[in-house]
Length: 638
Ligand code: PRX
Image (tube, rainbow, N blue to C red; front, side, top):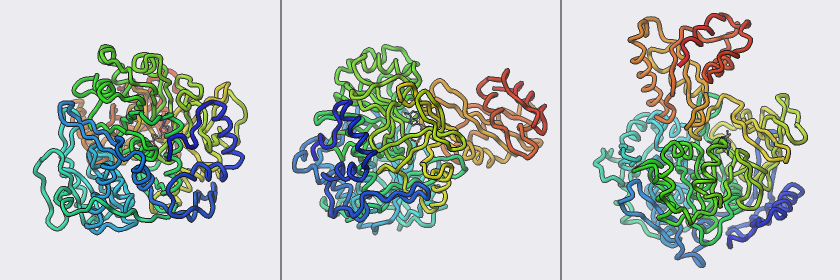
């Protein structure tokens, strides 16, 4: 498929496409979907149900997404670079695969999966470093119709076990170890611990990366490189139904347990493809780099599927922005001639805090488009990115979306539509955002603020939460029947551009990663010293939001000030063990009580104010069971 199909090039074309997508979505998406490789075309484009959340796209169609990512390009782009891998250590070897080579690698991995008994519909969990085999393995699962569930390789063994068990995965793919900046992490050991609690897993396939010796469990564990020796480099793609599961990706919500967001084959494919092409305005010779890990949805849609569906060259980076120094991103851009760069505000803010020379000593001449994702980008970070990275030459697009939306929902199209710092902008074709009052009334007109919801399904809409459709229904379609509820608050400015304000539920966004406050509280409460806890977010210069935990200790656990550091350290250890380092509280305040109403509900509003340092403006506390606790909390603020 040429990159130019259903490609919007001017603002007028955007307006026209948007209108057509709203007036006649079925015709619009049928046109967009036309050029893909289908084994069989659809019977119906869309069956919508925004009350129960049973939305179906391209019903009756048969396809395989990897034929669209790989096989389809072989005739015209066989020798074009598909995947460029930049290692953690800049002095070690890069790896580059053309479309033809990537196709062979994926087929070979697919055969290893088949030889190990993986069947269509089986769930395969991946807990792997950012190495080419991760991308290859994801596509190999899709090739044979297995459902991939990638678990970010920073989660703890407990978090892995929860996800593997929820998905009832039979196979886990991992590696001996991983590099993260100056550190090496024994990934296989973490998987081994997790699998002590995962009876469904019968096979572990281990990719050699660091060359570390690892324990291999007889009858369960095999080395990928040994299995690959006998695996052919061709593998026919499994024929999938449009609505067959493509992947599960776990994400946090306002309840304690992360949920498995399900995306299916055809709708996700069309949405990842269309949004990638139009948001990033990618051209045939671009070198595109998305810094997200494949363990998050951004890595799925915009490192892997979107670029490959478009026949683009996508760069995958194993390392971190600050290793070996804070110029690494810029060094990689110059080294590979990156033209389109997509990263998160947290990375920009952490680099902004280092000497400007780190960026000014690189030319960055190749860049033409800059993107941001994951959390609101504050104006200061936006201008720094625009000025010092983009040299006031590259549009900065602020892309708003979610794991559940599959792809970008609100964003400027680079160089096509207007951008405004800290504003995501306008909806993509097919997306009808509305602002609702708390009661669910649509708020008309511009210069308004409300709860952000989406009317009408788009092809990438979440299909279900794995194993529990009611949960999806209640979370996304229950609050305002007839709408998909995002959990975000937003403002529509005087020109109709959207600015995302942040979550309106009990979800906090730490460095672009979502955590439910209840999820972190559950983890803290596992600590033997703890009776109860309450977690809130607070503004953090680099992370966007930090995690502030108010904790009540068991009597005797923390009687003297000297006990406090030990108890706090042990609470952190517990969170790291239950979830992972990424959910470590930034501040822990040990308290004797929490501000509760007479009915026992914690008044988080008060805790948020304390965490934010807004203690002079705490509001009414008269409805509290014990108003005195508020003074104690204010006085002990960290
Ligand atoms: O609050 C919004 C924030 O991240 C949430 C979605 O998180 P997740 O599913 O992990 O996906 C992140 C990557 C797509 C949203 O509900 N968010 C994401 N992008 C933006 C954003 N907030 C403001 N501006 C954005 N561009």
